[in-house]
Image 1 (cartoon, one colour):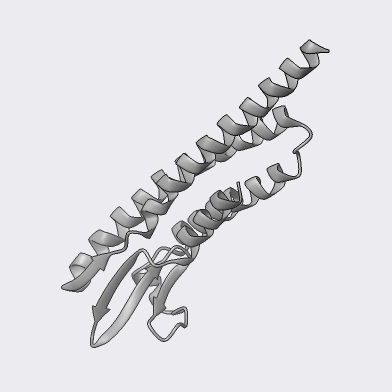
Image 2 (cartoon, rainbow, N blue to C red):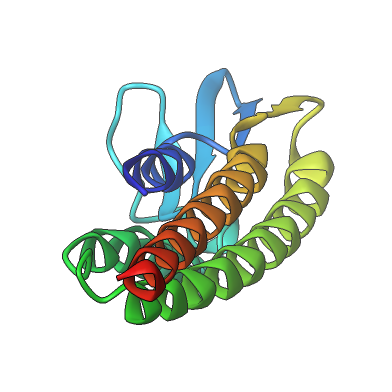
Length: 153
């Protein structure tokens, strides 16, 4: 579950698209447009949709928070399994929303700049889904072992 949180945070904090325009280099992040020097550009609304960025950031932030909460339910494995199932749905929605985000800004950036390339960091959400699936399987396996041990007594 910790690895899921780390992968979602990587997807949240890393750039999606790199491009250069008018002699300056820019990065499209999940939370807005940044220059290479690091400041979030306030005048980047014509290139980025602030509502779309805010929704994606909120969705990925929630997807990073749910496994942290699920870790504290280690004695209630069924609740933990349900939380991890909800996390899987959040990651699936986040990956779809990230795909829409990349598709939207790829079209905008391709029209503005000739020098651009996509980052591989949105694909980290797919790895987070795989790790989350393995966590669900592990929790269910633990629950089966506990029930088998209770049956033996």
